[in-house]
Image (cartoon, rainbow, N blue to C red; front, side, top):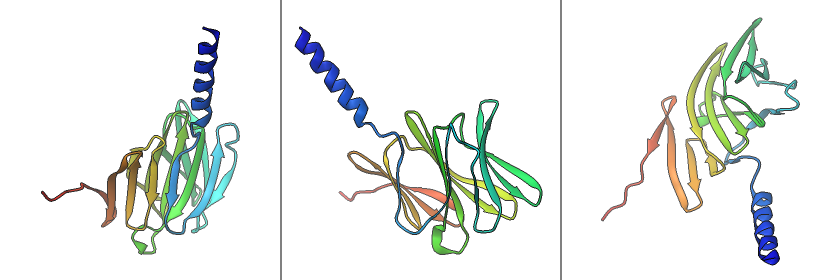
Length: 170
């Protein structure tokens, strides 16, 4: 009986130690990492290519990133709490406009956000709970891969994301 309990404990420890603490998001093309913060050190700031400062904060059970534009602070919520948050600039559709890709890792899951930003205006284009599934961000697509294979593809078209459904011919 003692050996069985020890084996169960060892298996449980191996499973828990093998879990990933961060999201599995890769960029197929160049991205500009603006800011990475952790819950215990959120005082860092980053700078966008356009020159605006970006910071992260949490107040009253809402976490957000904040862009300072001409003495105004623009807040965009990104969840209830964070463990680790990254903000990157990425050029979807190779049109010269840089979108903001925000990945919020919080305990057992992760959230992916894409925002359009220009001259003090932020607009949410995409939001998805991605857990710890594999995500590949390409210039025109966001691919969502499950352990069994590709699940969903979102195509960036005319300033928005559209779900592409796989279709197999009989």
